[in-house]
Length: 125
Image (cartoon, rainbow, N blue to C red):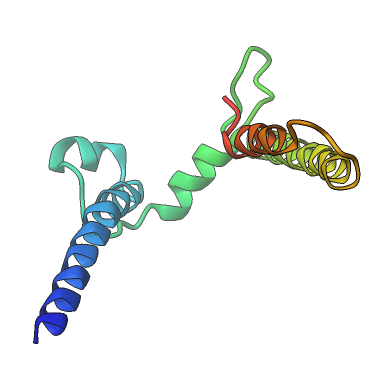
C-alpha cells in the first residue's frame, strides 16, 4: 500500500512539474498566432488564432539590419553552420585526446581526462 502511495505521489509531482513547464510555452505559442492588436486588448490566449502562417512568415522573412538583407532564416542557417563546426571540432579534439590518454602513459591522465570531459560538457557562451 505504501509503495502504491509513493509511486502515485511521485507521478503526481512529475505531472505537476510537466504542467508548470509546458503551460507557459503553450501560452506563448498560442498567443503568437493572434494579431498584436488582439493580444494587446485581450491579453495572452490559451487557444490558437487564425494568423499562424501570416505571423510566422512575417517574422521569418522580415529583412532587417543596416542593409536590409538579414532575416531570421539566414540567422538560423548561420547558427546551424556554427554549431555543426563546433561539434565537429570538439569530436575531433576529443578523439585525439582519447587516443593519447589510452595509448600513452601520462602521470595525471585521470585529472586530464576529467578536465577535458568537463570543458566539453560546459556549453559555450
